[in-house]
Image (cartoon, rainbow, N blue to C red; front, side, top):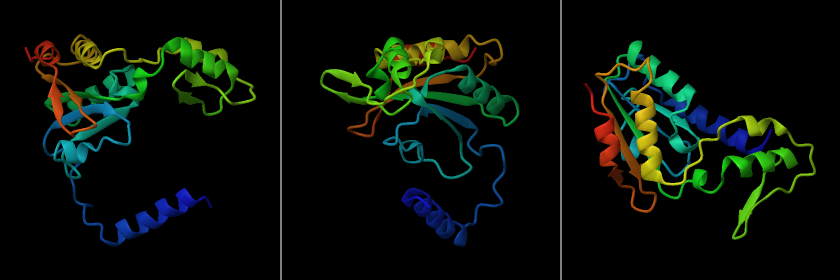
Length: 192
């Protein structure tokens, strides 16, 4: 058993011993959803004041409005009653450190973990790699405010998204913990 697996299972055993959340309803009590990044420095329960059962939190690399993220948001609204959505990207995001081409090249070299230094990304694997990575849009980020605006617009223009759902756009500052509104995104996300 790996050290991490053991730690997770021990933590779960402790959690189970005091578990008292079995009666929570399936729909989120506060009727909203957050689409945010998977970055381990972000804790939506803290920066948005959440407890179990309060809101849906959808996480992926960059907090991007991918087809799967939009699928989750539509389910969140249609079947579980969320009425407001947040798109929250963050400063110092790893998605700003590469492009689709860089990722495709790294994957073509090997499927092992790469590293980054001042001169860029480097692959250390001995192969084999895969050229399948060139067929994925990795939704990299050049500018946080622009990516938040792009994602809010993508969500709002989706044919399965109800027009009466407001979508707010923010960037979380990893140095201060603050949420910085992107006014253009929130304006684009207005309910109609």
